[in-house]
Image (tube, rainbow, N blue to C red; front, side):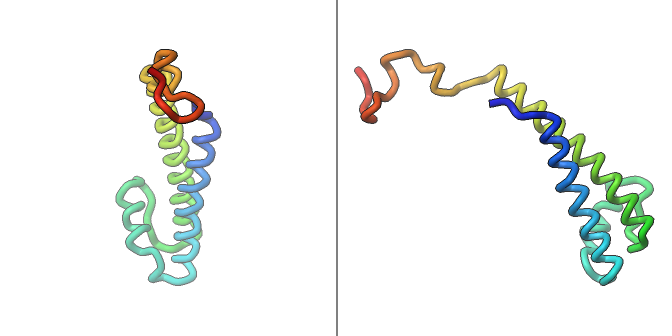
Length: 107
C-alpha cells in the first residue's frame, strides 16, 4: 500500500507546526513552560529566537510547518520507494506453498 505524499506532508506539517505553536504560545503565558523544547528549536532554525513574543511564536511556527511538510514528504517518498522496489508480501509466495484457509500448511 502506497502512502499519499500530499496527505502525509500536510499531516506532518500540522502536527509539528502545531506542537511548536502550542508550546510557544504556552511559553508566552508561562515563561518557564517548554523552555528546553523551544531552545532545541532555536538551535535548529536560523533566525528563530525563543523569546516568548508573538513574533517569535509565528517565526517558529512557520519554520516548523515547513520542516514538518518536508520531513513528511521525504518519509512518504522513501516509504513508497521501498514498497515499489522491495515488496515481500504474501503475493510473492508461490501457490501451494502458503497456508490454506484452515491455517495448515499445504504440502
